[in-house]
Length: 107
Image (cartoon, rainbow, N blue to C red; front, side):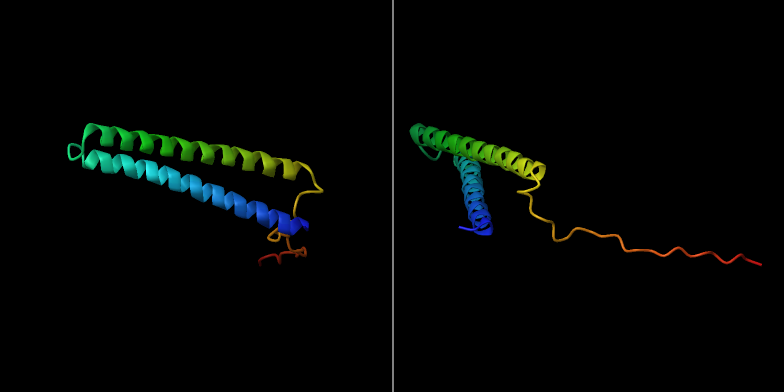
């Protein structure tokens, strides 16, 4: 596999991990909100189970997001320090050449 295909594959995997972790976080918060809104409508075991699952879904999603962010930061920092692995920036700004002009004295 070429280098660009490998980078695309890694990037797709990272996007999937981040999407899954975000979904877990949203699921955890959503379960807690549903339980708090319907408190008293269900038996205590159901409420405790929903709170337990919501809490651990949120913790798992947050942990995955934290570790994937740290991993990406370290990976990008390592690529920036190694010039052979660094990819050229397409939007690098170049300063245009400016000729020196002499101002006309005002009379």
